[in-house]
Image (tube, rainbow, N blue to C red; front, side, top):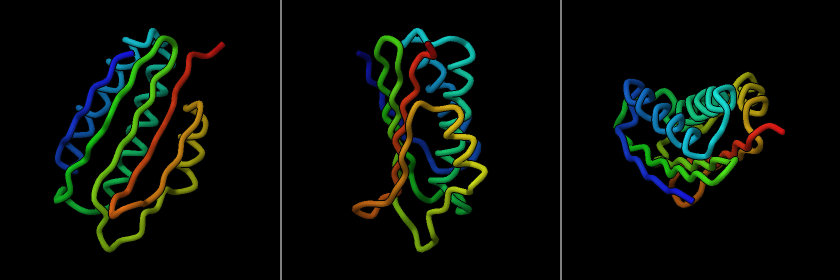
Length: 120
């Protein structure tokens, strides 16, 4: 098992780094190219949902875990006074490209967790 943590400013220009770390984690877990692309899409959708419409005051923290055939990514950032909304379209996309996921708010933070397993 391999673990990596990444903390970046909550701005759109840092999503590229978040996706790159997801792709690297997928490669270390021996996921296929298609599964890695799915992982990149999912982490992009979920991280954008965490950030909401605000402009980068909160820091995003992500924990990436690779194990043979599977990746787990947990993300969090401080809440603000706006609602945490994951659109129906995003939920459909995320549900189609992950093995499982969950989103929510707890202890003053917005959070997500996703798992991507190798397709069998």
